[in-house]
Image (cartoon, rainbow, N blue to C red; front, side, top):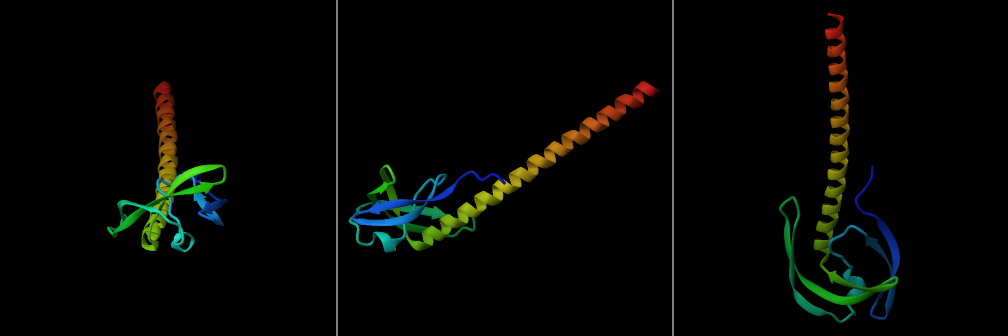
Length: 129
Protein backbone atom coordinates (compact mmCIF):
# COMPACT_ATOMS: atom_id res chain seq x y z
CA UNK A 1 0.00 0.00 0.00
CA UNK A 2 1.44 3.36 -1.01
CA UNK A 3 0.39 6.28 1.19
CA UNK A 4 0.10 9.84 -0.03
CA UNK A 5 2.00 11.22 2.95
CA UNK A 6 4.91 10.36 5.21
CA UNK A 7 5.29 10.64 8.96
CA UNK A 8 8.70 11.44 10.37
CA UNK A 9 10.17 12.83 13.57
CA UNK A 10 12.34 15.91 13.75
CA UNK A 11 13.78 18.36 16.26
CA UNK A 12 11.55 21.42 16.83
CA UNK A 13 12.27 24.70 18.57
CA UNK A 14 9.24 26.55 19.95
CA UNK A 15 10.33 29.72 21.70
CA UNK A 16 13.20 28.58 23.95
CA UNK A 17 11.97 24.98 24.16
CA UNK A 18 13.36 22.16 22.04
CA UNK A 19 11.22 19.08 21.51
CA UNK A 20 11.15 16.06 19.25
CA UNK A 21 8.01 16.20 17.14
CA UNK A 22 6.20 14.29 14.43
CA UNK A 23 5.87 15.97 11.05
CA UNK A 24 3.35 14.98 8.38
CA UNK A 25 4.53 15.78 4.86
CA UNK A 26 1.05 15.70 3.33
CA UNK A 27 -0.78 17.73 5.94
CA UNK A 28 -2.54 20.93 4.92
CA UNK A 29 -2.37 22.36 8.44
CA UNK A 30 -0.09 21.67 11.38
CA UNK A 31 -1.25 20.74 14.86
CA UNK A 32 0.95 21.24 17.90
CA UNK A 33 0.00 20.05 21.37
CA UNK A 34 -0.88 22.79 23.88
CA UNK A 35 1.53 21.28 26.42
CA UNK A 36 4.46 22.46 24.28
CA UNK A 37 3.14 25.86 23.33
CA UNK A 38 1.31 27.23 26.37
CA UNK A 39 4.38 29.32 27.34
CA UNK A 40 4.93 30.69 23.83
CA UNK A 41 3.47 34.07 22.93
CA UNK A 42 1.42 34.06 19.76
CA UNK A 43 -0.63 36.45 17.71
CA UNK A 44 -4.34 35.68 17.49
CA UNK A 45 -5.45 35.51 13.90
CA UNK A 46 -9.14 34.59 13.81
CA UNK A 47 -10.78 31.19 14.02
CA UNK A 48 -10.61 27.95 12.10
CA UNK A 49 -13.46 25.51 11.52
CA UNK A 50 -12.98 21.83 10.80
CA UNK A 51 -15.72 19.35 9.92
CA UNK A 52 -15.18 15.60 10.10
CA UNK A 53 -16.91 13.25 7.67
CA UNK A 54 -19.09 12.17 10.62
CA UNK A 55 -20.48 15.72 10.68
CA UNK A 56 -18.75 16.62 13.94
CA UNK A 57 -17.67 20.25 13.80
CA UNK A 58 -15.40 22.43 15.91
CA UNK A 59 -14.47 26.10 15.77
CA UNK A 60 -11.16 26.86 17.49
CA UNK A 61 -8.93 29.91 17.73
CA UNK A 62 -6.28 29.99 15.04
CA UNK A 63 -2.99 30.82 16.69
CA UNK A 64 -0.04 31.69 14.50
CA UNK A 65 3.55 31.89 15.72
CA UNK A 66 7.05 31.27 14.41
CA UNK A 67 8.53 27.83 14.85
CA UNK A 68 11.84 26.48 13.62
CA UNK A 69 11.72 23.02 12.06
CA UNK A 70 15.14 21.56 11.27
CA UNK A 71 16.63 24.00 8.76
CA UNK A 72 14.20 26.89 8.41
CA UNK A 73 11.31 29.00 9.61
CA UNK A 74 7.77 27.75 9.30
CA UNK A 75 4.39 29.11 10.38
CA UNK A 76 2.25 26.75 12.39
CA UNK A 77 -1.33 26.68 13.65
CA UNK A 78 -2.09 25.65 17.22
CA UNK A 79 -5.46 24.01 17.64
CA UNK A 80 -7.34 22.30 20.44
CA UNK A 81 -7.04 18.60 21.23
CA UNK A 82 -10.51 17.88 19.84
CA UNK A 83 -9.54 19.44 16.52
CA UNK A 84 -6.38 17.33 16.56
CA UNK A 85 -8.56 14.22 16.98
CA UNK A 86 -10.63 15.28 13.96
CA UNK A 87 -7.42 15.71 11.98
CA UNK A 88 -6.42 12.14 12.88
CA UNK A 89 -9.82 10.90 11.71
CA UNK A 90 -9.26 12.67 8.38
CA UNK A 91 -5.86 10.97 8.01
CA UNK A 92 -7.47 7.57 8.67
CA UNK A 93 -10.10 8.30 6.03
CA UNK A 94 -7.36 9.35 3.59
CA UNK A 95 -5.68 5.96 4.12
CA UNK A 96 -8.99 4.11 3.66
CA UNK A 97 -9.70 6.03 0.44
CA UNK A 98 -6.21 5.22 -0.86
CA UNK A 99 -6.76 1.53 -0.10
CA UNK A 100 -10.15 1.52 -1.84
CA UNK A 101 -8.68 3.33 -4.86
CA UNK A 102 -6.03 0.61 -5.13
CA UNK A 103 -8.73 -2.10 -5.02
CA UNK A 104 -10.79 -0.35 -7.72
CA UNK A 105 -7.67 0.04 -9.89
CA UNK A 106 -6.89 -3.68 -9.47
CA UNK A 107 -10.47 -4.69 -10.33
CA UNK A 108 -10.46 -2.44 -13.42
CA UNK A 109 -7.21 -4.07 -14.55
CA UNK A 110 -8.70 -7.57 -14.09
CA UNK A 111 -11.84 -6.51 -15.98
CA UNK A 112 -9.75 -5.29 -18.93
CA UNK A 113 -7.82 -8.58 -18.93
CA UNK A 114 -11.09 -10.55 -18.95
CA UNK A 115 -12.48 -8.40 -21.77
CA UNK A 116 -9.31 -8.99 -23.82
CA UNK A 117 -9.53 -12.75 -23.20
CA UNK A 118 -13.19 -12.81 -24.30
CA UNK A 119 -12.36 -10.75 -27.38
CA UNK A 120 -9.53 -13.15 -28.23
CA UNK A 121 -11.82 -16.18 -27.79
CA UNK A 122 -14.48 -14.57 -30.00
CA UNK A 123 -11.84 -13.90 -32.64
CA UNK A 124 -10.68 -17.54 -32.55
CA UNK A 125 -14.29 -18.78 -32.75
CA UNK A 126 -15.01 -16.54 -35.74
CA UNK A 127 -11.83 -17.72 -37.44
CA UNK A 128 -12.81 -21.39 -36.96
CA UNK A 129 -16.27 -20.86 -38.44
